[in-house]
Length: 447
Ligand SMILES: Cc1ncc(COP(=O)(O)O)c(C=O)c1O
Image (cartoon, rainbow, N blue to C red; front, side, top):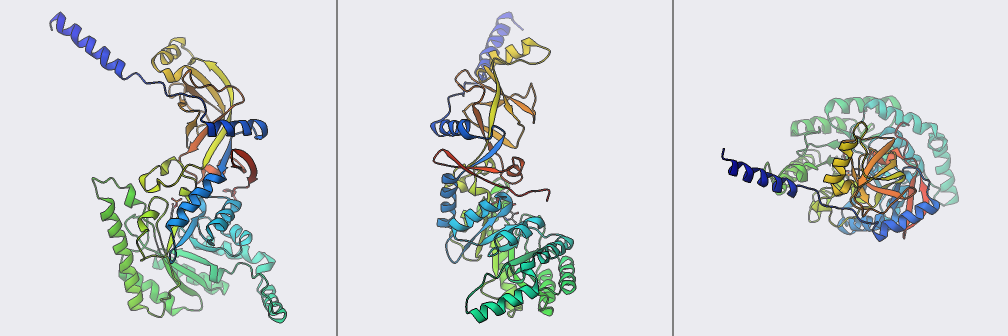
């Protein structure tokens, strides 16, 4: 190679490489987070916490209730808003008593705390979990059949309605995915002398279980029809997030949605035609989740739409179908240490090189805790340091010279999902108008 060609090539590489140099992203807090930081400094718990902005939550609830209108109903996905106080708050503002549940201890808890709730299971639980629900439910003296009978007599003779408490045979729908599981639930109903409401899971394309064949539906509905004392058909559930998640090069959103609706309709028409005595207008025909609920704006095939995460809008839900929603949930955590530059153990040079190359590594902050399923949100431009490594104890974040926070300030992160992550911080802090309000206990996952 000629010397001139070599020199030109090297210069080109240098210019090209320089173009890859990161741009400074950092800035001061936005006014919204500056106000929250002040509130937390004045009155915060000074430990990693989950903060829920109730003004923003209200906007998200209203976005849902203005999209899901009668005859369709909004069902709150409990695992994505895992706090009884929070669920009660959403129920009240959205005027819905419908909740989708996924964990046996939470079914007992909600039956106790919100006795008017209408619960649909979001996954088929082992029959042993269902048995556990009834055993624990019966331990509550208010659910004792004798006490119920007395209360009914009293209501009648006083001519007034005394609160009835949660009635599992009317307010709880078990999700069942196979004839085998249905057989187990039938045996449980016989053993306990209970009537179980059965909602059948349909596979509308997600391929996470549920029935696909009309023959299977026939077997299950025949079993239900033959055991009216023990089993009551209560509807269908067909969950469809794949409709927006499958890359469009594989199949379009429209194609996948039409296919999901087609499968659902096939099941409805068959059940109506073959089992007219089981069909009722008040069956729960459940579909959707946060990513897809807006695709049902003009659809009347189903009457019950589940939404949970969109109430909080964690980062995984930054998708076009949720443009009307805003982030309402933040991890807040104090800055423990602040310093210039970056220091990497064992080599001063590496830290200096990082700081020189990336203007977003001009400062180092160690925060209280870290390594959550979350992304730094404010002040803008903070980033984790993959060379230094991650830490759940004190995580290093770096920022540009424009990031003007110091020890005692707070870093705000947005969780990537609300499910599970919300359970890692103890009580939920609530805020309104930039001020801290109160604390709501979250579910205890280990319960
Ligand atoms: C059966 C079912 N329905 C609905 C949802 C939607 O929940 P979210 O609105 O939080 O995405 C889920 C989430 O996993 C689910 O499993």
